[in-house]
Amino acid sequence: MDIEIKVEKGRFNYRVGAIILNNKKILFMKDGKSDYYYLPGGRVKLHETIEEAIKREIKEELKSDIKIERPLWLVENFLLKI
Image (cartoon, rainbow, N blue to C red; front, side):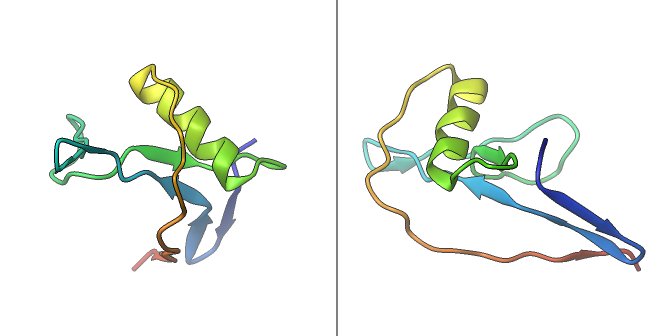
């Protein structure tokens, strides 16, 4: 179960993203539904650590196992219905 809290005026998603470097380049993703690029990752599941979540998401999206060097930062986004 993904950690998502829906309320009348918005929702909270607990999400992780990875910065993947290769030859001094950063991997960004884009899907056919969005006009923007984003870092690979996704929602954290209940009882899952952030490390487990990012490893699972990268395995799902890129079919690759990763080694996490270090967490970089925490970002909080609150999506509100207007």
